[in-house]
Length: 118
Image (cartoon, rainbow, N blue to C red; front, side):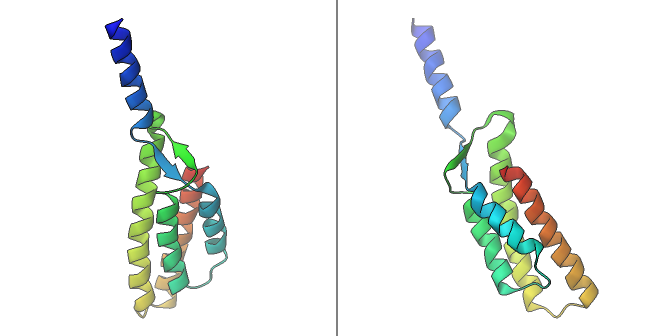
């Protein structure tokens, strides 16, 4: 009986520890918005931080099995890092080619983020 109780506690802790919350609707909206962008703007940079919050908070839960919660947490980190890169790129004078390459990387980041959220 004691073994069953310990196992039940272990399963409960496993199920509820490491849950990541995220908001797939916000992430999808921001991804769609970015896909139409034609230049790097401060608004786009703010969207990365909004996306990071959407990967840290929200109504959906990602449980730790199959690495889903880790993917959500990793996406949160990527969004925060991309926000820093975005502000750096937005504040510098870039050639058209460099700006286009960075903008495409931002769009790809959002597409990947949307894939993680679905």
